[in-house]
Image (tube, rainbow, N blue to C red; front, side):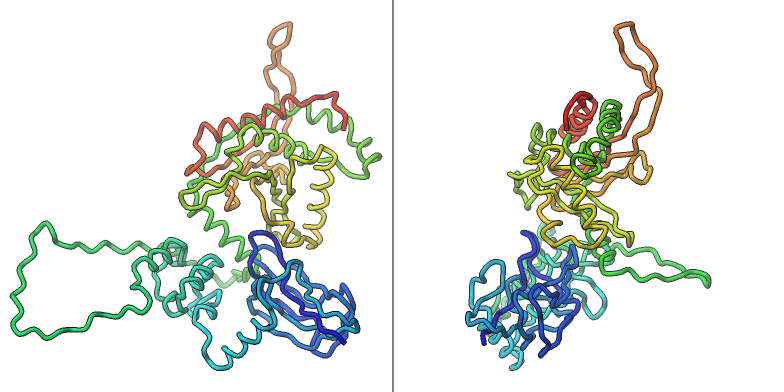
Length: 451
């Protein structure tokens, strides 16, 4: 018999922890290879962890609703093979089993630090984001101390700025108030000059939502976990980035006519439907190459220029919630490849089959609001990106066109592009030129191109 340590798998570059939603197997039960052992949830997506081999579950280190770091051992499986191995996608830096035993011993002795025990929400219902909890853990801030911080975020939530300000003002660890010393005859205190008068800074106002009246015929619907996270992320984005939106109306007649001409042949040859989404993504990728400073993130006072072009595409789920799967290295695909990527991610999103890695690492996002018949949208930036584009519905309109015989009025296919960007690092010139360049690529679409 051998024992396998099942560890929390790596789930994308920005995902450091996951919450155990449900154990699908109990201790003592037999497990088959690739059979789902437990369900987990990150701040972005739900997923399942499969068993690496046939065996028996002999120990669980965590319970449902526990938050587990990537790489930590979550269970032990006994197998028939004679080799002991870890099932993590990447080896942990330390010995996971020894670390878990040490944590269990510490908790049993009542010596666990308060920082490790900080929950996602306080007893008063105040939500703490993963970033705030991570900073609190690193700085040794207890749950009680965190609860005492006055938050400047929505509904009094503690923001990154709030906790960093608290850390800067907190006395160093181990420091104590100076002991009072007896002095025989202290000199009388001199009145402070007017110039040195200390004026206390007024407390930051806490923005509280307006009270909601509930009538007898009203229905109360509790937000599900995903909707709560979307709401938190959207509010955080608006607090983080000053949003500016630029609009361009593009004449996409050539693109529409080309797609109508090739769609049947494309389906026959590739077995895929070709929509307008991959055509728009293709134009965005070209524009990013022309204006690489739109493909950035902000880290304090540093600008991180991304080396890869990873395009997120917002997708509506059957539940009504929103998710953004990512096409990694989108500039490496031709139009057929982009089409297959778009269709695959959209299908798996509808069937709740996306993995955490599928929705991580995006550097720029596009949302097709035209799918719902909307001609315009003012999208919210998907942090930590700095820009997002919304493509509106394609509508037939009369337009003036220039011909060799002079100006004429013709029916053209028109589409609005809405470009929201972070005005901290993207000025109107760059934001406006970028969306104009995307429109240029769409308007100059080659009607004779092959797919």
